[in-house]
Length: 160
Image (cartoon, rainbow, N blue to C red; front, side, top):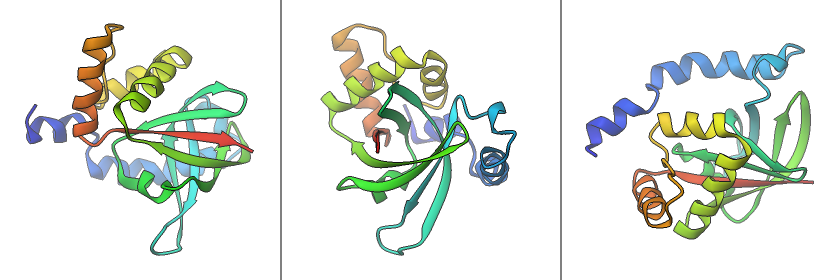
């Protein structure tokens, strides 16, 4: 896959800049139900700047304390070393610890868990260039390696 095709698969930056404030506002409003079953608002502190950031992210709830998200954006770097975050999850603020998953075995397990818990979210990830898992161990490992090479990671959030 060429760098050009990667850029085409991901949402254009102008769309992200346009939609992010609207989704952020919607997730904080009483009308959050329109999107909060598939999107949450992640709030974290920048490691270098100390500034607080809020970004909408898709998610899969694995169990009552575990949330997984996949991403190719760089915000996850602020969560290295198990960082505290706030998740606006289905209309409620929840404290959590965010842990990036970057190794192949961890990514394979995470993306398989996402696919099992939320097939719709897994499909959204693949549309954006994320791993396309087939159920074949060898094929899935190759796909995880490809996606990781393109910058995809997973982040595990453990709710307090």
